[in-house]
Length: 219
Image (tube, rainbow, N blue to C red; front, top):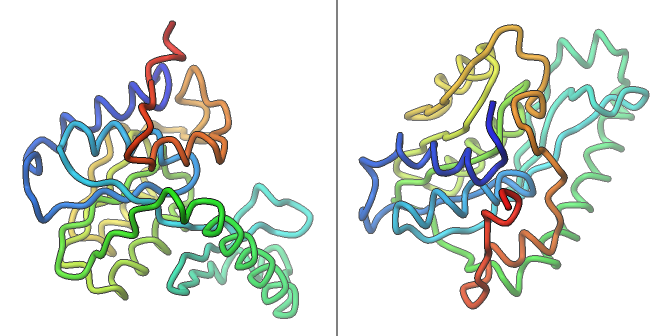
C-alpha cells in the first residue's frame, strides 16, 4: 500500500538508481496519473521529464473495461478477445478510437506550452505510470517509443498485475514493478490517496519554472 503517488515515486526511484546521472536517460510520464510519480523519479535520477499521451479504449457500456489503448504516434493496441467477448463492433471500435484521438489532441494543446518535447531517438527512455491493470496503455506507450527510435525502453511502475507485468516484459527491455499483489483488483486499491491528477498538476510538473510540492498531500 502506497501513501500517494509521491511516495510511490520515491520508492520507485530507489529501484532505478542505476540510471542516476546518465545523460542519455529521459523520463516520460503517462498522462495524467503517471506524471506525479514520474516527476519524483526524474528529479531523483537527475533526468529530464516529459509527458506521453495515452488513452484507454473503453467498452461502450462498461467504460472502465478497456479493450485497447492508443498513444501518440499514432499507435493503437487492441485486445481482440475483449472486443469479441464484449461484442464491440468494428464501427464502434473506430468511433471510440477517433474520439480518444481527439482527446489526445486536446491534451497536447493543453500541455504543449509546458512540455519540453524531448527527443527519444537513441536514448534510454523510462516510461512511468502509477500502476498497471491490463497493461494496454503502457503497451501502447512502449510501441510508440519503439516507433520513435528509443534505444532502450524501461517500464517503471509502483504496482501492477502479474499478467500485465509479464506481457510488458515481452515488449520492453526492462520492467521495474515494485509490487504485483494477487488478487490485484485495481491500481487505486493499492494507494491510500488515489485522487485524480488534474491538468494543472500535469502542467506544474512539466514546467521548468514551477516548483511542484509533491509532498503536500502528506501534511
